[in-house]
Length: 504
Image 1 (spheres, helix red, strand yellow):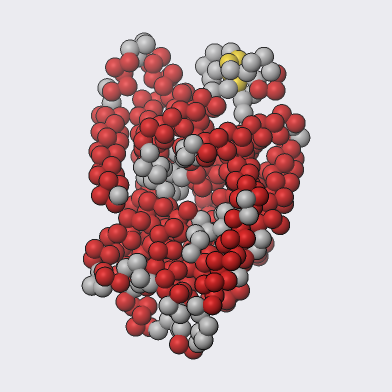
Image 2: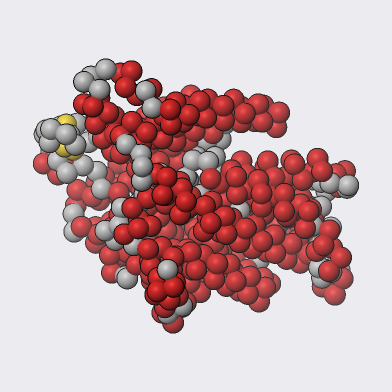
């Protein structure tokens, strides 16, 4: 074990890896602070370039982007009332009001500190829980794995933005797309429509980039076309006039104020860590649940919604605390707990590493290096955020007109470069068009991506289970562990249905 830790430390703290972490955090915060862009988009765009990096370097860059993006979303939310990322929506409730009251610096620093605390808590839980869970998962057979996949798909669909029917439908589309290509048991071609380029199935890179990046580019372009950006800039100029006479010397977060937010921060850290470990629950749900619980247990609950620092701390801590725990199902069972975890799972696959319990045994040094990188990236996030906060708040004013063409070109070039395949470019455009259609009809995108990732494993486990049972469907409920997963899925859906109705 000592040898593994020494090797992991050498990988994680290599100068080049540290440089990539710094670069990733800087890029993540920058994109997170621009409304409409996010760390997920950056990770998706960079997936093709994972081929050219060593695993430790690639993980350092992607982890930095992920963590920086989580905090970066709060900058636009506080500065302009426009969440830079979906998870920062709850932060904007009190953050923007605090800014209008002449406390932008206090709000931003509260968001930074609570984000780092929540994120670090989640990372520590991941480090101490993932390994024991992976050991348990190694004892699973096809029946248990199918139950686990079914549990994850149901939760992913049902908990996505509280839309059960739409979530299930989109998850089914993701599974259907994953079935294109060859049958995993017989090897027969299916759903290829006679096109040789589809015989190997749809590649991860074009599907992920299309769903996340291309659809977002189209939507941002449409907003720009309708000149909504100009209206936003006018609104920002109006609000800036409210802050005339602002005195920075009176807007410094004191130790007493920081201590008063710790209770809310710890509530957010606990809730976010729990929610993040549930496949599909998401950052937005964690942030709003943390905000609601913190308000219920606060002695100054009447201040929530009016610029409360506790409200900012709880929302941002809950949002960021999903970071580490969302990797728990990925490392323990090979199931991505969120869209971001799916992107990391795709990165592992591109580097020749299969997500799941064997990841921790076959690539122990690399995974432990990743754990160390997760902790170090929090420190980088804190330092860079502290130094550059005054400049970050201006990033949200970058005109999307400059960003949209660059993102589109990177998506096309990166997709083609991955396999030198024109077919992949067409798949990218198809996935982008599908993402736009789903967005227009208010369907969540995360279940589709997660269904696409999980689908092959679920089908393989189902087919193997049916072979073991001689075609008898009752074989799927003959394992106590499998029954436990089915019961847990039903119980959690009921729980979160009640919570979501109460929130409405």
